Image (cartoon, rainbow over all chains, first blue to last red; front, side, top):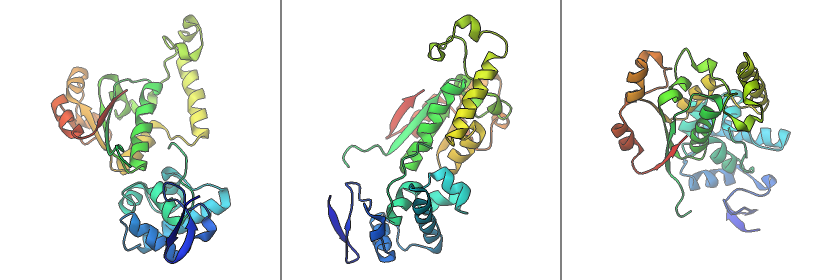
Length: 105
Length: 155
């Protein structure tokens, strides 16, 4: 398992750069992961989505799909794509330090 | 990643439930991966964006060997409606939205949606017949312009 040093923390990452252990995540790590995705700075709206992703992951064992995010996070699908143009569920999951959601919808 | 796909244009040409969903799922999935996506609706595929028809798309129960049902049974009155109801139930359980909601959502993802001019003229439709997400009625030449630099998928 490859490791990377992000914001001074040694974290385990997979080949796509997703954190292998969500417990290793910190807010400083999120800031660095977001920069790598071209999102700088993280606005309060970004944080709202990131926090929601983590909450869902720890409750349900998987991050939500874009549709589920749009329905339950309080941020619409349209806004989600403005916040995360390269794919809301995927990029927000990466920044939130959780595995990539595997839904088809 | 080398050779990753950055843009797709998907043509939806069929008006059955099983003809429409794959293209919608591929377009939505492309956007979810950060891939630019356009949808081009042609022939009976126009039903997927037609205001009055969008909620009445059915599974084909005749000439559809995948259903493993005798053609004569598939042709009985109400079979298509029943098969459609069953499939919609299954999809809903998997959190796959109805076509109208799916089209709205795909519009919100920033995907482009267009109707084919030749088909629109043939069926006697106009822009007002389509849901708001449809950006325009375009010719095949305009479609190729919009699709430029990406992959084209015909369904």
